Image (cartoon, rainbow, N blue to C red; front, side):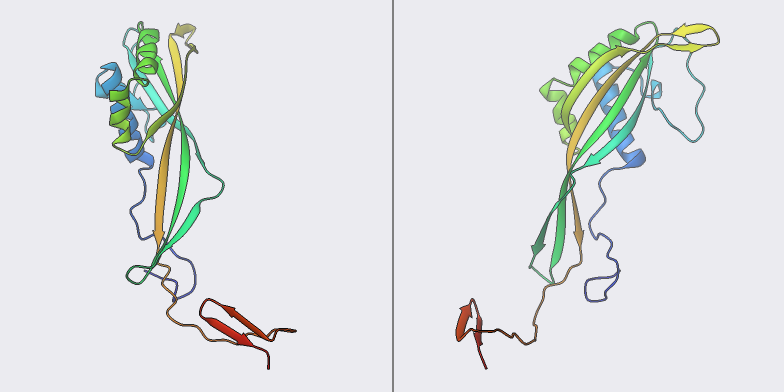
Length: 197
């Protein structure tokens, strides 16, 4: 592990926020909890080996994170305790689409979009640091498969979270140098006293 005394690149020393499958697990739990669909029927949209699609008479959901939009600039603060560290704080917007299939797809889609507005459901997401920012839909988006229309309703929603990453940026314990000034006879700033030669 490196720190600011070694030079070069620094990697975070804090745990990473939920990403990839861990984030998908949190979103899947919310969809299952709000709709009552079986966990095996709420699945990530993009998988290395896609499972067989359920039959047209089965209600199920495919979801996926489509975009992760962090703030352009984060706030960096230095913590002087111990040897010191810098923490960058950013807020992210996480865009998700949930597609509901089956004969009751529209019903499950509206149940989910309405359920995201219930405080107790939002509290479950908040326990993972996720806040519901926006909910859109449901939007009819049927799929044509083998000359058969498959019922599909999309709910797009945006989650917001704060992400903190800590880096080993050590405290400055001492410094030496020379300050030169022109046309200054005596300047005092904090603990520095500068006099012209």
